[in-house]
Length: 273
Length: 273
Image (cartoon, rainbow over all chains, first blue to last red; front, side, top):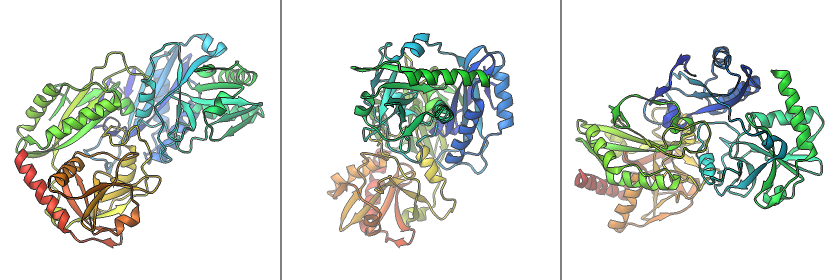
């Protein structure tokens, strides 16, 4: 089911700025038993990103009602929300009156095998580099050519994620996930000041770390540091937390801290459901 | 008139990757007396950009026929071509079989006053910085949030263009144009290795410079160099060449070289028409 501005449809105006320029944002949310998980965090991130792009805030009451209607019948699914700056004329200048476009759609849950969660996944380093762009860093916007080029680099179904570096060779994130590593009982993740998407699941892991007194440090790091880690994991709203058991020739155990976080996350998801 | 995959329409599939991720390219072409000007150069740039983004090359014969049909009745207009990687499922990974989406649309010519060409325009420096992204630099792709944020910075109708610097404070281009300056009878423009769009009109100016033995140097330069120039001009396929008479507090004469290039361009346009 797809709702475009509240109406069931599957086509949008060709002069929508989302299509013309990628002028918008999106959220990808897990749906379990009719409930969008961590909806509050997703809507709060969406609001914060709108502010940064100077897109007017969407009507949250309206959005929440529509989301509830779309999700209600779904047992296990993925909800995608797209907000764009609406339609407009040719040219980058935005129209004087902005009527946001909102697209709410339900998609099949990818249903990854449980082994990804328990035994970990294989990852590779992408050759596509993330650019440096502080004005857009962190935002889940619709300008996603870097991720597309990175994801197009491999076809091997035994590799679940590609790790992206920026043009200065700092490790930033996965093509569809944020990346963490553990060294000597401290957790580390990239600071995302110049590149990367500040994922909702990344935010939840930060929250869980504070709550459970785990050390989490946001800093810049390179390949070597990552490959010398005790544990590595990736996360996003759909996969939750996946341990990384192998990056090219380096192997990692599914470690204690990763398992602990998975357990805390499971607990938190049960509470919000 | 809008042709979407050869059919008159004004809506595209919501799962088009152009809408979902800005996964595509565009061209903006001037139409005079039913003729798309410099079409060959535009299609050649489109092909080169497809190659860089690993988007299959569009069927040029089909595209050219459709363009001819759309342009035929137009006296003076703007033709926009959008090519995307077609529709696809959720996620960055591209579908195994790619069916390009092509959108060909005709728009009113902006009809800028002739004084812009003869007496020059006013410009300002944008605070929005272009990121550094060699993988995408030069490409006229659909990821245009930087230009949108820059163009949203000013409303003053007496300012015609905003000049964009990159995060290292190198001067790159205008929000909708490429930028050149003249110093001691040599022309300079940014090299676009890390940011910017390699415009078709920029390419034509390079061609004209070679043909008429004018010195044109592509290099990195900062604000100071630009503000100390003898002449400054901006260009794109619709405006042609506009002298810049003022950038904030600095004034520039409409110089000899700028006028010469305008004359060469006029001559060349007459030949291709």
